[in-house]
Length: 362
Ligand SMILES: *Cc1c(COP(=O)(O)O)cnc(C)c1O
Image 1: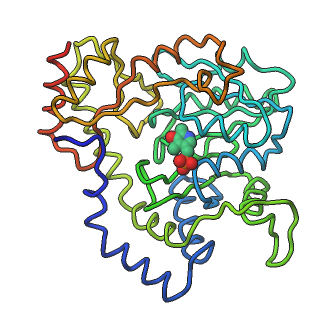
Image 2: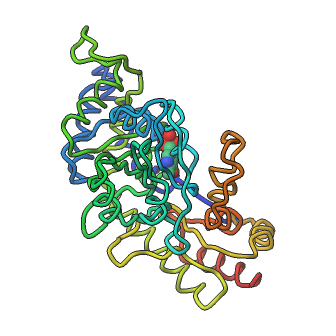
């Protein structure tokens, strides 16, 4: 049996350090937005080469708070890719605004300025770009063009911790960036967590207040805020794991390289990566016109897999008002993408087995 993902291999060696975090939190009663959270915020800001980091309760909370800090409200439109995890769009809806779904590029599977620019109008108040599967979007081009029209850009970096674009870290390249620390992400908590990074002092301060009841002081509340805070223990676990992230992402790249090598010269397609980018392969995705047959065969061989995502956002029942839209690339991807096992502890022999089984289907 080969699992789709196995987190035990990275967590077991760190158990003692996790225990130390728990001991500290217990003995110091450091539970919510205390010293542990502040330490992690500093660690992660440094890591992302970003001036500010604000820990929050999830990736979705990060997106919601980023939009709130930018003043997104009812009647506003926010451009999002149709090919992403639904949270990108739902954060927009949670603000009362309308997500405007755009198609993605046929090769990079990412949002591009060409697709964005066609949907911009006077109601467009923000653009969310998603570095899908850890593959950086052409962020510089999008930010420059969007800023010419005074439209802010949010990075949904939930799948791209540590990815680089033009030698700069994802998370510092647009107005504000949102990370998820859901356990299976490249950097995951042992529960829920998220963060915002930004170089904009004012946005950082607004997000920091909004996550904590609009608080500017213990008993003083500047705005109507929320309770979307990061927990101390999760922050402590994240600081422990952050030290290993470079090495883990390196292993992800190695695994993907083996897949690419062994499955080249087949009908399968891989995501194309810009020569300006260093991806972090949150998922190991291939595209195939033969998905049903391959998944059945993988199942027969007890090999885990995933499909990210089988329904594009604009066709979700929750977005019935956009179900009629035609976004051909996103629709094609939803029918053809297949995520292969990819995790840090995956061994060469297991990768070989996956490839052999897949080749029997081609
Ligand atoms: C995981 C994910 C999110 C949401 O993060 P949570 O921590 O689960 O709320 C948002 N966007 C993308 C692209 C994701 O992969």
